[in-house]
Length: 324
Image (cartoon, rainbow, N blue to C red; front, top):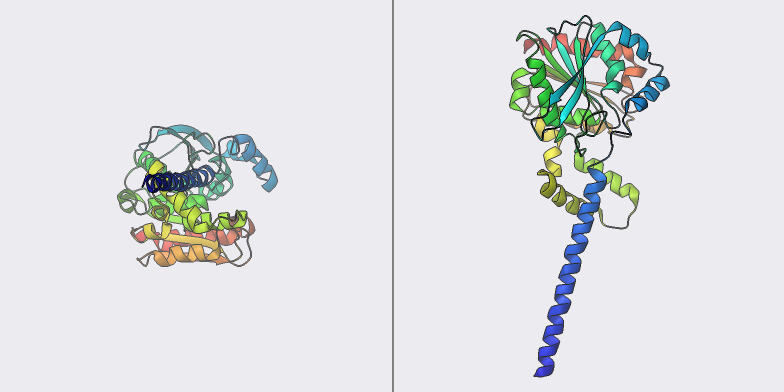
């Protein structure tokens, strides 16, 4: 009898050890996935010095840009968690009461790396607000969340713009890659549906889960991807209050009334061609257009086909977005 009792106690202890081991494994796996997926860039890797190196690589004349346009750096207060959003309000002559494009950079970029394409909008009579996304440039907010938390910063930038222009002036949003996800998620908001006249998504991310699972597959950890994704998803939900599915851009653009132009390339190896198509097909209204090229690398379409890029955007705004 005594022996059975001892064996029972041993069984319970072993069971507890097993449970603790499983819980511990799940916890540390979730933390590891979270840490490696929710902080993909930082302020050092996206500094102004990095932007200047990028300008040199693409032969962009920063001095000429600075001399042509008036650039006012403003600090926009975030309504989400109290950080500030550094933004450059760019005009030709200081007059802010014009049609304006808010530009959302991609991962690894900053408000400065938008300048080359900003020049296209400025030359066509638009003002530009280009801002730093979370953990990028001079925005010190933690975490990079594939557009989910970032979409709140975009909403704050729109609020700032509304305060600076008259109701008859148009508000447009341009977002590239990671910034395309930010813009796409934001487009489901009441504010976007009320105030935004058009949106342009250049090589946008459509699906956070796909991006993460693809990255994990490339690591060859030997751990099942489904387990890694599940633990990371649970940890993200606990720590930041949203799930991977909440960052599915397609689910958000289903709810938008904003005219939308998707720009993509068939050989994109970062945000594959199907992502832009999925976003386009998810939009339920008819005020939408897609412009696709065959042979540009990710987010290089403007540099490879500047005339076609500009023409498609301007025609889209004139033909589709003017009815808003």
